[in-house]
Every structure is written in C-alpha cells, then in structure tokens.
View 1 (cartoon, rainbow, N blue to C red):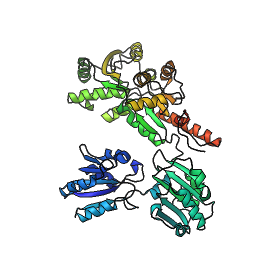
View 2: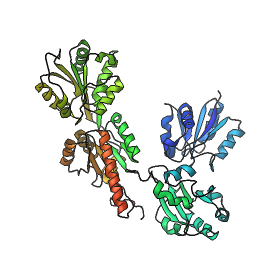
View 3: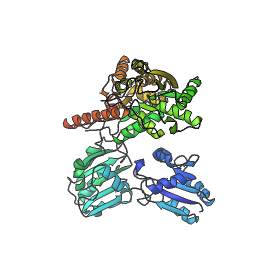
View 4: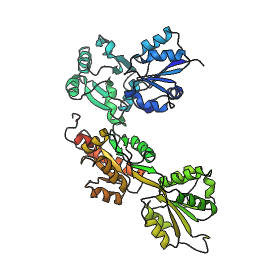
Length: 516
C-alpha cells in the first residue's frame, strides 16, 4: 500500500476516548504530526522510533510530512476533537487533495457530546433539538434563541456574557440555565452553572479559557442528578506514588479510576545482588530437590527468580513438587503470571507475621525435606526466618536483589513536594518514607499522608509527618481505596456545608481558588 495522510480526531481531551481506528493508525505510523503538549500522551500508541513532528514548534510540519507520504510513508496528523466539527485542519486536508496525496479522515469523539456527558448534562434530553454552533462564525444570535432543546456553543467562553445578553435580547428568558465547562473530560475539568442573566458576574473570576463549551438549555438543570465525573472521590487530586516503576502501574490505574492524577516517582531502585553466586546455588538447589518450600515475600523476589530461570533456560515447570508461599496478593499475582499458583497465602494480615500464623510446623512424617528457600531483598528483616526456625524448618535466606535509593526526581517534582503541590502521597513501606524524604524532602503539611500499615505510620511520624489515612489491610490496592474513602468524606463535608469542594493543594497559601 502506498503512503497516505490520516487525519485522526484525538477526541475531547481524555486520552482514553481515542477511537480504535485512531489507535491502530498511530501504532503503524511512520510520521506523526501533533501538538505534543496537548496530545503527547497519545504517542504511547506509537512504535519505537516513530518520527514525531510538533506542529506548535514547527507550523510547517505537515507540509514536510506530505513529502513523506508521497515517498510511501504513513503520516498521522493528530487533530483536536473531531476533524469534521469546525475543523482547524480543513486547509491541510485541501492541501493533500491538491497535491494528489491519498488521505483518510478518522472521526473523533466530539466535545459537543462528550464534554456534556462528563459534566453531567444529558445532551439531548430537554427538547427535540440539539444545536451546535461555532461562536466565531455567528454574527446574529437571534436565530439561535429559538432553539427547542439544547444549544452548544464552541469557541464562546471569552464572549459568553455578551452571547447571554444577545440571546436574552432575542427572546430567551434571563433565567435560562447555562453551564460553561473548561478542559472537559480531563482531570482539570471545571464547570460553572449559571443563567443567561448572570453569566457576567458568575464567570468574572472563574479564569476560564479555551477549550471550553457553553451549554444553554433546560438540560443543564439535570446536572446535579447526572454528574459522575467531577464528583469522583479524588477528582483532580495530584497524588504522589513513590514506588518502583514496575510496582506503581496497577496502583496508578486504580487512582485514575477515582479521578486522581498519579505521579510516579521512583524512590527505590531494584538491582541485582553484588554476589550472584548465592542465587545461582539456590536455583540449582531448587531444581535438584533441596527444598520443600519456597517463600516469596515480594513481587520483586518473584521477578529475580524468574530472571534467573530465564538465564538458565528454565520455566515454571521447575517448581513441580515444591510448595510455594506468597506473602500477599501482589506477590501471588506475580507468581500466577509466572505460571505458579501459590499453595499458601495469608487469609488475614498480609505480612511475614500473617504468613507465619498459617505456616505448618515441620513434621518429619509428612515432610521429606525440612528446608525452605527465602529469596529476598538485602534489607529484609529476620522475622520470617526466626519464625520458621521456631516451627522446625531450616532456612536458606538468600539475597535475590538489592534495594538502593533512587536518584532524586526533577527539580519541579521536588519543589511540588515541599510546597504543597501534591494533594496526597502514598507510602507503601517504611523505606519509601525514608527514601522520599532523603531524595526530595518532606511533603508539605497540607498534603494528605496515606500509609499502608502501622510500621509505615511509625516511620512517617518519626519524620514528623501527620498520618491522615491508613489502609485496613497491608496492600497497595487497599491503600488507594482508603484514600478514595477519605477524599469522598472530605467532599461530602464541603457539600453539606454549602461550599465548593477543594483539593488539599488548593488550601495552601497562594494557591489559586475557584470562586464560590
């Protein structure tokens, strides 16, 4: 197939609203022309080495890319919203046609429907008509005052008060409901609900800029019942996740489901042991039948053993005949992904103590071998070894990996941590507390401190950090859920008091506040 240009609608703002066709074209693209600052996250769909051209830094980027299409390459031009709705790329499409370059236009989810849905406004629920207009193309608003339903206005936020007056002058009542939503479908989304007669004063200090939509009609009145996005428990919260990159992925996804904006800042770097011979002997013993049990106390330990297996050409079948224990759900998931189903998993506290409570004592009649392999971190405690020894087992306590303090994060992140730019920080271990403070400084006192358990809380308090949230069980998932519950209670308290809910970072001195 020859080269061509695909004009792909990026949707209204939420990167997850990209169409399947758009994602497929990005995955195959040779050249991508994009406003990198606005739509950079969509580049995750691209293959490594794709030629990315920033249309903001180089307004002539597409013209150069057309030459690439003529040479047989697939060029994807990422367009705001839907290219078919008041498109700013119509001239670019025309240029392709004029140059006899094949092109495709991929519709995007239009802001006219998506932003309203995210704002809790049913798009076509208040009459037989749903009208969309571009304010920059309207000279006479009187023709739009007769709309029998919902009027959606693009590019109108700057002139919204004047538009309101024009619609009133044309016959619409001054009490007609209006909503103005900026940064729709993103975690920066903000909606002001007003009426045509009060648009001026209500928007005066809102600080709204494009992209924004103005919605006029009775459908706005249903927002309180239909709002689901801006009412998420952690909506817009910037949450620091100080873990290793591998560990933070699932936790970050869970936080996003609560409306938060997770920022992954590694505080621990996982590295191989300084002397690998100990692990080499342990893997050999595991294969030759030296052990009755293998106990994994972290997903990192599973990863270390798995990498050793791959090094020796082994797979999960080498665990045949062995009993396998996992300290918690995350470790168990890592084992299952490896192809190993754990035989023992604590039903209560997910910790070394919880594992010991359910570990069977050594019985020479039932257990042909009395030895347990413990592949662990270099800084692991001796609790498990001591407990297993008391139960009659012999332990090979092997350093499978080292945990070292990660490099400091960028200056912008360090400043945000110390100045209260983060709304919350999740501490999943004592070491994440010590390492974060060591590489970036102490979180500001407005930042909500959430910890995974009592020991982590104790470490946080040693650094004079106020603990606000503690998980009901020691798992990252439970910690995120506990923070969401805290956020929901804070939000409900503000609403009950007749106040606009504010994020913790908005309470610090000098923070921008939304008007009441």
